[in-house]
Image 1: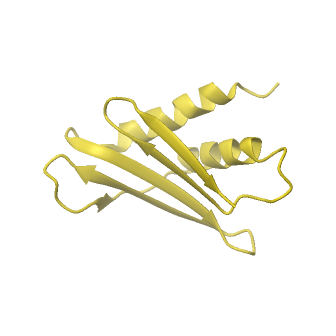
Image 2: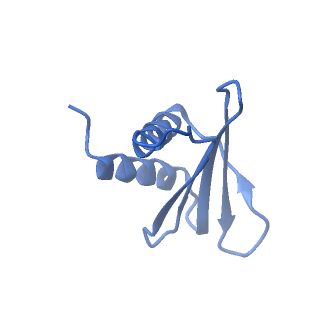
Length: 100
């Protein structure tokens, strides 16, 4: 039985949160598929001091969970997703965006 989608969101948030330093404003992880199905991943966060964003490594756990969410959200659509972005803030505010 597949786990609840909320549990996957929670896991993504916790995994991203664990990669953040003490002081940060926002973190964004993006997965993009090209026409061949190759997945390109990026992760960055904005430090609390308003400097430029800093990249971080997106681990395999985040990757699996992002793909799971995107595929589940895309189940009833005929067009496959091309990009999924997740943003999270220290307050716990969480957003996910799918592009086709």
